[in-house]
Length: 398
Ligand SMILES: *Cc1c(COP(=O)(O)O)cnc(C)c1O
Image (tube, rainbow, N blue to C red; front, top):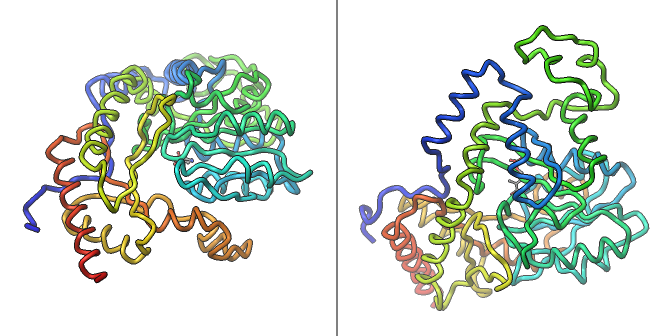
């Protein structure tokens, strides 16, 4: 392989254009940098996309999950069923409340929790199911929803990776009692840092709205805030009705989000093109398993993750990742299992072997470069390099 075969190809890259610059500048010049019209508009846009009545913007997806959990009154002694194959925040948010995460293993095809195992994990202490649309795939969401309804527990949808995805015309964000999106720069839509809680439950939305804002009353009038231009009255601004946090999203970040949401359809379409190019280039590869998407799912691609077939070891996958990096191709090992993270092992005594499907998959995944500006030539270069590196592993196996 020649070193100059490709230039540097990042794993991810936000798509920031003229509209984003214009709206951020508008926010900066407005004199209102927090709690203003950009946040309002962003909340309406995301709620509408998610098919929900209410949106509550927060400063990260993790904060959103924490507030959703608190609003559902989940706390010490409660159990929440969730997946070990996810970004750590989905499970950490359960720990923030003092509740216990109960992991269940996943299905290899979809990488989401096995619905039968979810059902079996339910105990009298189970307060909720926290389901993640892994890599944006909404598989089994309707089944989790049915289980939660039957058991009279809440379904919390961690849809941080699924903005714009629909299954049988139901948008992600609307499967659960409450859904949470994240807007870190590698997501389909970014605000730099940010998140959004979506729900049809007005009471729950209001609780989240209060808790993101230091537990302030729900109905303090705008114009009373120190961020406004009119003389503020601090009467209700300094009243705190419940334990709250500062999880507010700034107007600057929200402006970025408003611009991104206006362009969402074209962002999703562009990402679909990139995914299709990868699929047509890698389909039929003898040693790779590609993502499988239900024909009834309209996919908003978050990342493009392939995996080596079952005979490959973690060490072999590591060498392939290092090889890609040595060729300036960004890649990732999404996701190391949450239960095997040092903190979880120490705190809860988790050991390898407890969730064998998640563990086996997590040792073989390869997240390939995936962003809106990836050219067919770059995709070709990534696939060619990947193929050569896998071939090298196969040679050394003999
Ligand atoms: C991105 C993400 C989050 C939220 O991350 P933040 O960085 O806090 O915005 C939560 N859960 C999952 C599954 C994610 O991918």
